[in-house]
Every structure is written in structure tokens, then in C-alpha cells.
Amino acid sequence: MKKLKIEFKEIIREKGHKEAFDFLFQNSNPELDYPEQYKLYKLFNSISCESLRLKKIKIAILPSCTVDHFVDIFKFCLAGEGFDAEFFVAEFDTIDQTILDPNSGLYSFEPDVVWIFTNYRDVKIPADAGASAEEVDLLVEESVDGRIELWKTILNRTDAVVLQNNADQPLERVFGNFESNVPWGNVSVLRSYNMTLARKTISGVTIFDLDYISGVFGKVRWEDSRYWYHSKHAFSMDAIGLLAFHASRLIASIKGLAKKCLVLDLDNTLWGGVIGDDGLNGIKLGNGAIGEAFVDFQKYVKKLKDRGVILAVCSKNEEANAKLPFEKHPDMQLKLDDIAIFVANWDNKAENIKKIADSLNIGLNSIVFVDDNPVERNLVREFLPEVSIPELPEDPVDYKSCLGRHSYFETISFSNEDESRNDMYRKNYERKKFQQTFTDISGYLKSLEMEAIVQPFDDFHLPRITQLINKSNQFNLTTIRYSENDVLKIMKDNNFATFYFKLKDRFGDNGLISLLILNKKSSEELYIDTWVMSCRVLSRGMEEFIQNELIAFGKQEGFSRISAKYIATSKNELVKNLYHKLGFTMEKEMKDPFVSDWVYSLENGENECKVFIKRMNNT
Image 1 (cartoon, rainbow, N blue to C red):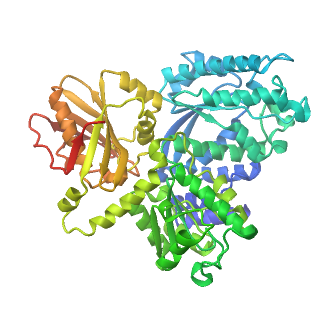
Image 2 (image 1 turned 90 degrees about the vertical axis):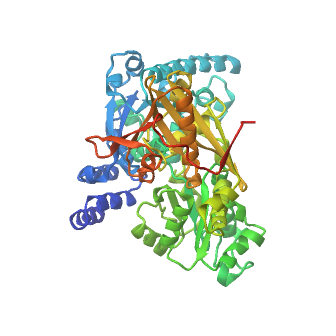
Image 3 (image 1 turned 60 degrees about the horizontal axis):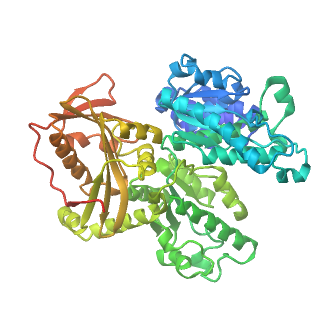
């Protein structure tokens, strides 16, 4: 730590606070003990955060234990995810009172996130000795229903999302190994509680898996009775870093900042050896301990793909050699169809990763790069500091656990689009190659044979709608985030109109790719509250198609103008000039240089935009 502190101060002096910030987080480790974590926090506090453009976030913590030391490290970890956090911490063990009192400081704080910070001691289920499993289940249901009423109170009084801890498992077992067989035993009750909590979670609430974190840290080390009896710390001080890290990653996911794409090296990363030198039969894959480890790593990567993570390859190889194992090796778990973009050449990997990001229309900070070679990792870190790069261990048997421990790909939902996302991006890459065969854009767009469906929001598409609102950063005019509960309220409010858009073409179905939330501000004015779109359908005329739909709806409903706002962020410069391009007029620039207001006159507006997209009925 002493060497790191010296380097950190040198970077501040010679390069600046932003570079020092990046260096600090590249060298942080959530598994360090508390004294080392606190030293990192102190270094972080010496950085001027104004130059970092961190996103403000207000987090209320309602604890049943002491969290003072935790909050410091939590603030540090949140900064690593791009947040400047402000905290409200309720008095110890006043969760119910704080939530139920409409005049409590919780509500005047106006939080973005409310974290109900409980542990197993708060699960007070009076299961008598000899109670049947059915009797215990009823008691557990009653306990969880009480928790749900508290969630609903918060959701009704705030615009916050709620985090709820599940119950960690204590070490002591009255029945020893037989504890799980006893319905009224502590282990059985807490397991039932956790399963019921997850099953009955409502929109706007996310369960934080405290039990999993305690297992990762180690049950024997997790609970330190000295801390509990002397200061009411519910877990070991040395677990603070791990807990804060995972909570920060989860909040980043809730706010749409989870990673989207895994870029993979090949030689000694997906298999042992060098395919160009060792040949198909010479690489280590499937046979022996090392070969089995590579197979298991590939299986894990494939599961990430199946739940919505985009896969890309970036390898220094001849393309034909690089593709050979995917096509012909019997133990290869990943196939070419699993890879959205395959780049194998002898170019600089940083440049190749930039091209991959551009081809996918995603930000560099959405990418995780995995490579066994430390030279390549450091080169990409140097030129692309936004890209996340784990320090892959030397032994491939640890690759899977290394990638898993970083929790890059946290998620709070799963939709049909997630399951087919990789295939959608792969087909999008095929579209771009197809486009290169045309000399004019109109001919290309017409040849795509695009068809769109336009419908108001509905319950069936609610998970995908909420996901798109919270994950879209580049094509997002205001970056307002809504929970499922928020969207449900909007759907029921007659002052709002909502539309989602699906698009398909000759290459396949893109799924639900854009949405509008419109606020009927007056009988004259229709305001665009939210407009987001998946970047994979950019430059195909979908923006203009939606503009046509917007104008048609506005005229049909008798509005005289459409108003809108552009709020600039570090990620949405892509749409900075969108409203100007679509014929809106800038009404005024506000004192805030990152905000501008726009208006479109439905009485004097131009004719509809020409597009090559056919409007279809939803069948």
C-alpha cells in the first residue's frame, strides 16, 4: 500500500485527478481487509471529484445494525461505478418507524435508492418445536407479506428503487447436520424465508443476496461476535469491502450501467496453446486437467451469452486458423454462431476493440476484455482506460472464478430479447457487411425490407420496456430512469401516452427496440418525457419513422406543438443534434449548459420524413 500511495501522489502531481482516480480503482481489491480498504478510501477523498463528472445518486440506508464504517467504503466503491453518492442513514434499528412515518427524514431526503439493510437476526418467525413444514411456510408467508407492505409504502411515497437484504445463515445449528431436516429449525426457516422473499418480490424491489456474499467471504470469518456485542456490527469489518463492491455493482446495473459485451482472446484464453503453431490436435481442450478447465470456462462464457451478454473475439491470429477450433474441435463449447463479432488479425488490440465497440454501437465502458497476456492487457488499459480488464490468473483453472468474482454482468431482469441478443448483434454485423455492397444509402435501406410494429405499453412487454429505459445510455435524450412500478403508474395515468416499437427485416427480428413516453402537459402541448432506442438499429430511418408516428399522434389528438428536452450526459452525445435534425427549434438554452429545450409546431411543421419502413399491425 505504501508503494501504491507514492505512485498515486505522483500521478496526481504529473497527470491529474482523473488519471489518479483511474489508477486507484485499477489497483483496488474488494477482498482486502478493512484497514487497507480504509486507506484506499482516504486516498480517494484526496481527489477532486468535480473533474470526474460522476453521476449524483442519493442512497438511503435503513439498517438494523451499525453501518458507519461500511458507508465510507460503499461511497468509494460507488465512485468506481461512476456515482457521487450522498447518504441518508436512519437511526439504528428504526426501519419500520422510518418507513411508516410520512414525516421522517427518509422522505425529505428524496432518495434514488432505499436499502433495507437487515440480516438473519431480523427474521423473527415464531415456529414452535414440532411445527410442520406447512405451518412454518404459513408463518414465513406472513413475515414476508409484512415486509412487502413496507416496500409498497416506500414505492408509493418516493420515486426510489428498493434494495432488500435476504437473510445470511448463522454458523450455529442446534441439530447439527440434521438441521435441514427439521422444518422449524433455523436453517430451514431462513432458507424458506429467502426463497419466499425472492418469489414474492414486487416491481421496483431488488433482493440483495446477503447470504451469497457471506458464503463468498467465508462463514467462519463472516460473523464476529465481538463486533456484534460491542458495537452491533452484523458481520466482520473485513467483509465490508466485498459487501460494498457487490452492492455497487448491483446499483450500477439498476441504473443501466452494467457491462454488455465480453471480448475474448483465444490462444491460452479459450484453449491451451497457440492454434497457429500447435494445430487443431495440439491445443489443450477437453483432455487432462488443463483441457477440462478451458472447457468449463467456455461453458461459463456460453451461459453468459445465453442470458444476454454479447460475445466478441479479438485475437492476434490468421482468421482461418482462429476459426478452426470453433468449426472442427469436438470439445469446443463455443461455436461461431455464439460470437457476435469475430476479429482475428495482427493489428493493435486496442484499435480492434474500438472497432468492435463501433460496430456494436456500444460504449467502451460497456466492454470487458479477457486476455491471458499481461502485455496485451496493459496495452489496452493504457489506450482504452474505459474498458474493464480483469487480471487473469496464470492458472486457467481459476479463469472462471476470476471472471465471476468481478460481477461485471449484474442484472435485475431477464427478457426474451436477452436470450437472443447475441444473435441480434451478429445479424446486425451481417447487415453492415451487406451495406458495403451498396453505393447509396437509400438502396440499402430499401433492400432491408423493414417492417415495424407500433403499440401502447402492455403488461407482457413491461420487463423489456423497463430494461430498455434503464439500460439505454447513448440514444437517451434525458436519461430518466423508471422502475417497473413507475412504468405501471404511467400506463394507468391518462395524462400520459406510451408507445413501443418493434422492427424486423430480411435478416431477422430485432425485437422491441425503442419506446416513447409522452406527457400531455396541456390541451396544446405534448411533451416527450422519454425517448430511448437500442443503438443496434441506428441509421436505418427508425428515428424518422418514430418522428412520423409522433407527429401523426399529436395531430390526431389535437395538440398544436410537441416539446422536448435534451439533457447531456457523458454518454448521450450521439443524440445531441437529433431534435434539430428532425425539424425541432431550440426554444432556449438554459443556464445549465447541458440542458436545452426544443419545440416542434404541428401547425407549421414540415411534411413527414421519408422512410423505408412499413408499418404493420401487431399480429
